[in-house]
Image (cartoon, rainbow, N blue to C red):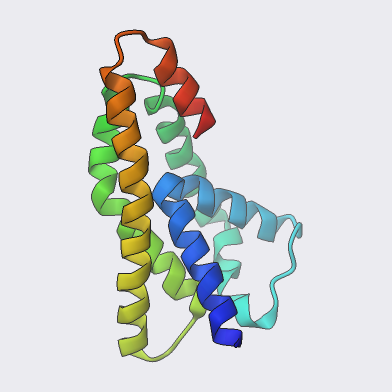
Length: 147
């Protein structure tokens, strides 16, 4: 049963990574760093998210994404590039969450989580394309802020 709980957490991270990989890493890392959450022993491997290097990188990329999301068509270009990046990031985040040592299991989890990330990213990117087709500019900012 313990592995099912860990799998649920890993797939939750993967889903969130599809919407915003950098915000997922940044908020989780800050929560770990500021001791807002206490990691149980089964999630000790996630403590790396609270390191200075990870927090700085996630913060910079989140800021870039935040501002690019406000510009019509730049947001779609960003999402297009991240169609490759987010599933890999979601898969790696899930593998790190589970902390397994069996390479075959890591591949299975990476594929499952990467697919989950791709689905949530596809929903976000598809919604963005529809909003960008709208002739008025306000909807893009509203949708971007809601995301």
